[in-house]
Amino acid sequence: MSRFPPRRILVAYDLSTPSRLAWKHGSALAQRCGATLELICVEPFLAASPEMAALAILTPARARRVRAQIRKETGAD
Figure 1: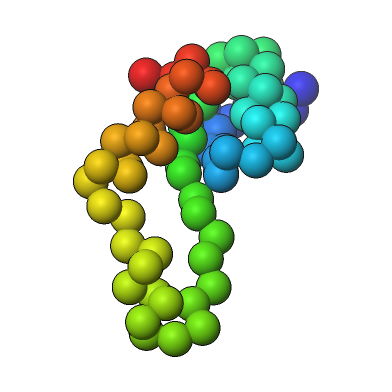
Figure 2 (figure 1 turned 90 degrees about the horizontal axis):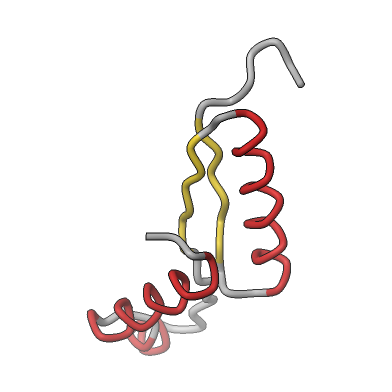
């Protein structure tokens, strides 16, 4: 381990298999370092037009569903 271990570790999470693996690795690293593990939810979206961009708006209901799914998968609170 380095002389100056991290105090906080940020993991980008998009409900994909690679991000689940990143969460597991980040969690293990945080435990070893005594760091805080933080998660940021990301949703890649490419808007082809302003009309398509309007479809990407994260409604409160969708936000609640995504948050619940992330909590279930990661055990985060």
